[in-house]
Image (cartoon, rainbow, N blue to C red):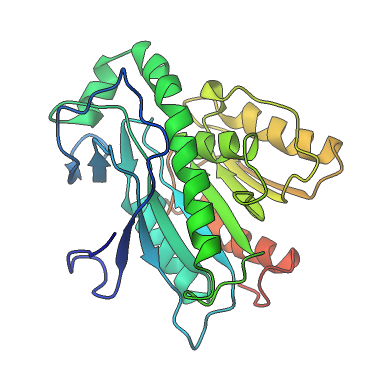
Amino acid sequence: MILLLSPVVLKSQETIDLPLDNHPSDVKWANDEKEYFSNIWQTQVVTNVSIPRLLAFPAKKEVANGAAVVICPGGGMYAHSINSEGIEVAKWLNEHGVSAFVLKYRLVPTGDDATIQINSDGPQVEVNARKLLPYATEDALNAIKYVRSNASEYQIDPERIGLMGFSAGGAVTMNAVFTYNLASRPDFIAPIYAWMNIVNQDEVPRDAPPIFVACANDDPLKLAPASVQLYSDWTRAGKSAELHMYAKGGHGFGMRKLNLPSDEWIVHFGNWMTGEGLTKDRY
């Protein structure tokens, strides 16, 4: 089913419902999906996602270069940081000819404000996140399959579809990499300060896609070592890998402007795509 999104984003943007192949029997969403500004996180968030959806941002025909990225926002599996780790990333990619699809994968059911609850749940956060990760991963794999099966409609090369994720979205990205099949394999991946604690990391796949990794050394969640490990694992397996480890940037920098070198991660990603033959422009 395709629905028109409200005009706060783009009039021509589509919202695509993804399949529900499996639904957790022991997880109940008592509250409806909700979007609001979080005073704690100081950004727009989406919570209580029980039906996975894609927000489609196709590149304009005159600039489209055939590449596409499915974007998985972060938020601890309790919320989606929908702007700085989703829509703003998609718009930057669109400006450079890359079509983008922001994935609203399934989240932990929460109360009135998930950004308050995630602080109060303590150790239960990781328990809850691990429980939902397989279903969020299924959503990411279905997103890749959807984009690939509709590539001609969006002027996309079915062999240039990537998967990018931030924090918990990075966990979804990497869990998808360890579980994809031929139809759902991303052609390139970009885990950005990925929360690898909740991923049961497996061996690097024999057909592992090229990887772009970015993180900040001063990430308060101490995610930097896991990012370095991903780079090392891909390199050791003889796969294409690039790592950007910024001295400062904290956690969740996304598209926020901090006047730090980490602000340029998206430019580095664009140039990496060009280096991998995915696009032709320099940024």
